[in-house]
Image 1 (cartoon, helix red, strand yellow):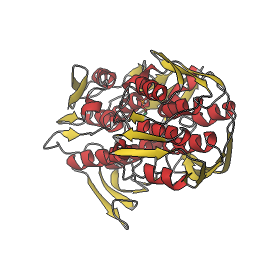
Image 2 (cartoon, rainbow, N blue to C red):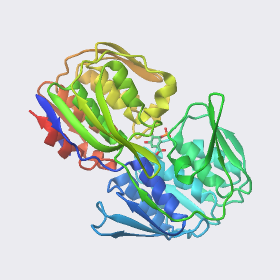
Image 3 (spheres, rainbow, N blue to C red):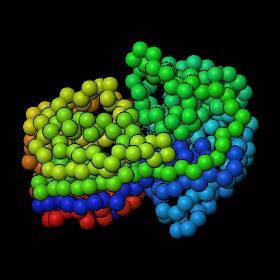
Length: 430
Ligand code: S3P
């Protein structure tokens, strides 16, 4: 599919945002290994969280829906307990979802059966030794295919280990913590820079701050009690509308109940430092996660140097930040973000190629990019690289650019935000 986006004269409204993908994956997996019936309110219909559900079903977990059905209903998960998953009769297809593959590997490391995890072409090209190696150290038998999926995980008797995570990745940390539930002693992970902390929040793990480092401890447990989870709106989805409502003229947007976990929301701090007008109100908690309402309006931006320590807290927002940087006065510098090359696409390459095609002034580095603005963007045809966040970033770039921008393979937004193009169109006045 090709999406044509016209230049917007104004951008106004309240977008309907999808539920948080990261929290949803974790809620489904934790519910599956809990004792008894858990409920998940606001489980996303997007493709990645659905990949997690289909894997859990193959592992013998019953997932049904109350009320409105798969889309928006209350999801009911019959937890089978920590050791109650069944050997799958076929390979577990994680689709495009790195979170499904990496977090589920942590749980499967503690089971008494063998399973094989596969993914689509993009997922099969992403690095998997980063989880395989620590899971082996815990005692699991794990083999990758030249460092990639397919991954074969044989259960093992796991032992507590202390890890200093070399990769700044919440997925790696979470795989270790979930496997640690099955170890015979304490497992801990020390992280130099905080990555998203949903797993430790949701499992209620002990987190201590030692110097500048966070140490997360997980003790072997016998059972996880069932509970009800409510998934907040996804900050990473809101990010596209936050940037659009900032850089476009005559723009104003309100977003309700957006997840504002500080390990996820550094984009707000960066945009504010650039001059964005962002109001945050009605701050509250939902299911142990901070949420709030956001009010955004057009603002003039200036370039900034992004502190490398913040990179894990805005890793998924860097492509849309790059779009914002094309409209900021001066140079915006992003370094220390080499892991962007290991996402659903090589996002450094994708951002640089596409923004250059639209007329932006872009320098590319191994571990980031610099963008000097403001530049007038001119509509052209750009590739989504089959990557949902690149497609959505280019959609916003298309609103800024003069004329029309065509985003190729635009259907990939369904990975995290099936309604994205409708919401964008609803708010754009062309
Ligand atoms: C995620 C962690 C991040 C992020 C991904 C979701 C998670 O990956 O890019 O979209 O849910 O844990 P890394 O932790 O590998 O950087």
